[in-house]
Image (cartoon, rainbow, N blue to C red; front, top):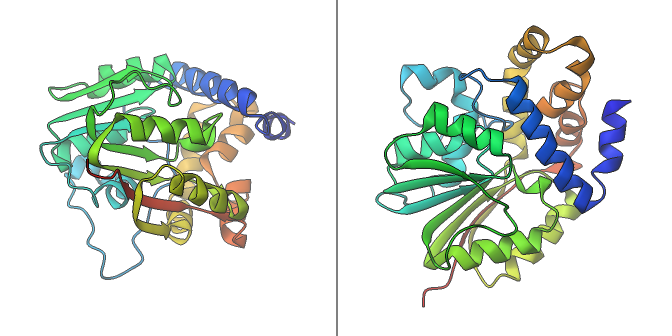
Amino acid sequence: MITWLVRVLLRWPPLRRLFWRRWYQALTKRQQQSDFVFMNYGYRILDGSEVAPDLDEEHEPQRNWIQLYHHVASKANMTGKQVVEVGSGRGGGAAYLHRYLKPADMLGIDLASRAVDFSNRVHGADGLTYMQGDAEALPLEDASCDVVVNVESSHCYGSMPKFLAEVSRILRPGGYFCYADLRTVDGAAVLHRQLEGTGMTILHRGDLAENVLAALREDNAMKLDYIHEVAPKWLWEPLETFAGVEGSAIWRGLESGDTVYPHYLAQKPAA
């Protein structure tokens, strides 16, 4: 019943924004474990020619989640650059980018203030900070960063065109936008038109659905064990849906092809 009600509410953009903000606030309040720092569906490498990122031993258990960030963001050279992640969640993605891809400054922005507080407490370091902000009205100056990263977050937004306009605004000329998220097939076509409407040049376009589904399959038992260990039984169904476990709407959509996972690298025109 809870899951059905959520699906109905998420059809309206204002309610979608409000729901996801409250959900992430509540989730962060309940789950304070510092080992729970990723909330994406993961990416498993299926192409033998793709090189897996070298990870420190402590990060191996998080490999699939990290590989999603690596695949999406490593196509833009971040070394020595000003990088912003919009929708940084519990901070694991921005922390990975900061540690392994070596930007000069890494800023994570999230709507949920508790997630920002958690991220600063767990990940905060020289050159890595998190701040509260709205993806549709980013608290940054025009042309203030070199790379914007957005991974599995935009489905929560009330207006994708507003967000894309903000991305274009804060990017410096020649800057890069690294993006990936879930969409229906029709929604992916709309997304493509919206990206084209920004005036940014699309350098790469792909669908990661097969890789994401493979990661979901590999991590399924681990996710179920974790949910059943830390959550009360009445929360199992919505948390399992949120986590994309076997039988969930996300899982079924990726299996059937009704859900896709668009990935883009776009560049703002040079001045």
